[in-house]
Image (tube, rainbow, N blue to C red; front, top):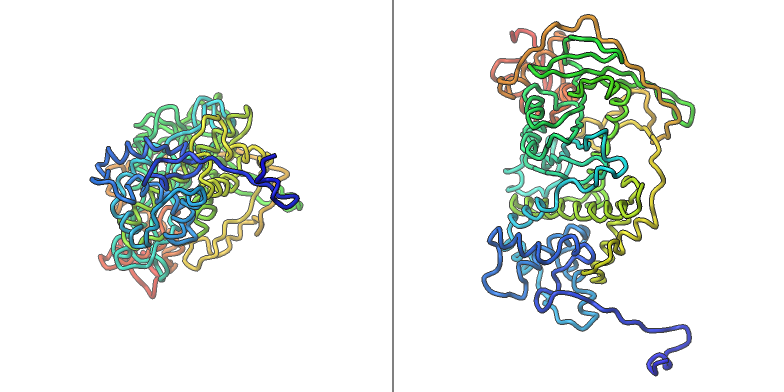
Length: 537
């Protein structure tokens, strides 16, 4: 036994840690084990490509700035200097000299990095992660992906942010609209865009269509069923399965043996499935719901209606991805950046960090054949990654599965159980603030029985579809609002009720559009925030 150990009190020992970090000023530039997903040469390449490499070697090189941005999102609860201390804690303990910058120096480092390299880093990391044979990833020969938007990411209430992203309706923090294309089986990001909430989800989703390919099946919720958007998705070669709004009137061309029917939206041949779902919960309570789905999978023998209704549930994996991003990583906090450039940079860093974590999780799942990525705990991956940043551990390595992967596999979640609960958000400005009396329980309940019934189409459906692909989006939405107003001409409609009925527009956008249409005489304003169609035609 070494003499140094003999001098220790009984029960105590010493150990040493071997660190492998970049040399000199580049030492603080790491992200623990996630550095293997975002290696030095990748960061250097995106900096070179975006022409953001420093002209002279500083105490805070630009490469270090990129890793600082990622660590800033990994530790959203602390300020700049504490983030820096977490990056350098193990280095200082090992006797390596590091810079001790001020908060202003770290802010200047962020400005020097700019959003471009972080955006390019996300583009490199983004994409499907799983092999087609990985459980839960594919439906037949198609990889399932989904579109969905998120408009609840809070920004600092600065003048510049309000000017760029708009004020939140009824006060509160300004928000940005995030639209992503997600691989539903792994919740990995294939593409992302974001901006002001006033632009609408469909406009943002159009900017992601180039990520689609013929081997993909796209899922989406209500609000993406505009004729022009459906035609644009079909032009990519991808198939789709999505919900139709209640006011869409689809013609019945051919009835199929499984109860679905062939139809057309604009000029696009589609198949419509109308289903009623009876649910029994573990406490004995029951309720029914309904789906009205449209798809380009027109072969009823290869793709039965019941299988499509069951598959559509996979769209909700997108909500789990947003929960991990907003609440597990950010813990519901407001972003740091008080100006739009900083918001853009921080968002790309946040999305890159999320994708790096998903990459490690999928690698862990695929290392154990037959493991569904759903069983990998995101919280385990996040907190293990945080620990390894503080320890500067596993920055380089040759093992297939590292510390994060081993801890994920040691704490695999049980197989997914079907569950149900009502959708309710504790926010006075949310369309889901008021309890929806649809029979679903207030709290999550396990489903013990589920029966799917395919419904016959309504006899009053039209014989043809109106082609609105060449109508401007503003006119299409106004026409939809007029149709809703005409259903109850004596009713004084509130913007909240119209936004909830249409399903694809935020409350703030609905308020602004109704006010503008009333000023132009398209509808009539009958009182404070109430509108009607009387006398508008």
